[in-house]
Image (cartoon, rainbow over all chains, first blue to last red):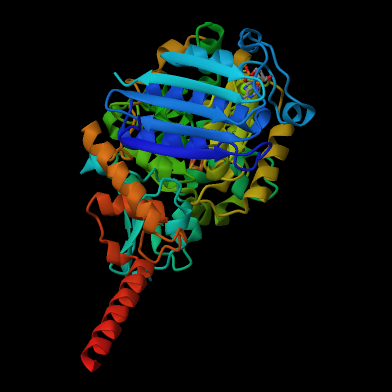
Length: 141
Length: 432
Ligand SMILES: Nc1ncnc2c1ncn2[C@@H]1O[C@H](COP(=O)(O)OP(=O)(O)OP(=O)(O)O)[C@@H](O)[C@H]1O
Ligand code: SF4
Ligand SMILES: [Mg+2]
């Protein structure tokens, strides 16, 4: 179900030039809505991490923002490669980031744990060869 | 109207309605309406970017003129350390301090001494453990106001210690009254300011009930008045008391180097400050302990009300600082100082919700929907002809009822083409 506000941000593999723009636009919209500093801070972290995972790890995908009167929903859906062991990927410090990503300061293995910590609701499903889907929810009040 | 006071103003008679300032404003606070620039009070952070870019000198900073010091029985000058940097090759700050007395001030108190006390206060605070990472400097009021408008979620990170000029003014007034046996209200404390942001911070403090200062005269004006005196002067060497660290607050890096030499970062120039604040907000700079942000390139030596080239001024300050003893404010400032004078803010820094489209979130959502619809039809040239800085802000202005679709010359052109097409069709119909 689409929210009252619905925005889509397609991201391509290793496209670092545009990385961070989705999260910046999401923050701008939330500022226009006047959401609290606390929600702002948590969405900022989670949206940035999930956006960068699309750029760094996926074969391309889309991040979508839906805002409902009572909540913000972020969904990231990609075309692969999928995560073989999700439980392992969720652990702090686990990372398969390549040289290029590491040189840019990514690859601490903190993205997924940070998303989970900051969101009020977090679901991840992944299938190798198909793709990964992450849904996050943030209550507005 | 004190609560809407801004030092940065428009001189309408000089404005040609060009789009230079429109494009440069970091908070999208400028619009061109009826051929003239307009500053949206709620969004303006007094950074002075528009003053720098305007070729017609239509953007001005209102500060106090030198005569205003006569309103007080006594006047004390509080020079920002940036003032020293205006005099190429200056070795001794004493010369400047002495010269300030020659041009009409009864006494002088270095703001760099205030910076020393603030350095110590922040360092003490950082020892207490439970503090946000990174702690963000509160010294540049333009940056603090930028955070209020664009990064409200980072407000808890802004250090709750007063700016050096405020602490210096408390000290100056007390010292002067003791020395001369006069009443505090007889003394006017005047900051020698590099920028409009500080002027605004005096008239409309961000986190204090009332400023300790009574006004501000620009570095530019004072520089002109001092110049003839400074050349033929002999200075009393005991007169100057700030440390090299305090003086270095005038240049980018100076503050972080004094407060937290390790795990700190200093950024200068508004666009760079914005980039780094984005990263902090995204949680990417978690290991950082201290962040110094200066709106001006090079730090306060790059302020819009300075005279000397900021690179030269930086060099003058650094050379001077290097020739001074290595005393750190930790040893130099007595701990009693932190209790004797007010160093903490009086109140919390509140977010500025100037970007909010409506106080009712549902209405705000509907407005965003309309913005999205409009964005589909706008060309995305960000040309500024409509008077708004970007197509997106133009869409925002439409939903807020501040302008109409036909203010966009591209939508207008499409509309005219459509009408022309209709006429052609009509004309052809008649002929048949
Ligand atoms: N969209 C995705 N597609 C495929 N694999 C993914 C995806 N997102 C995460 N992963 C896998 O999960 C691991 C952990 O992700 P996480 O975001 O926690 O850390 P990271 O991206 O490696 O490092 P950091 O986020 O700290 O920069 C990644 O290294 C990668 O192997
Ligand atoms: S950097 Fe210094 S001079 Fe520039 S706006 Fe900030 S306080 Fe003023
Ligand atoms: Mg990651």
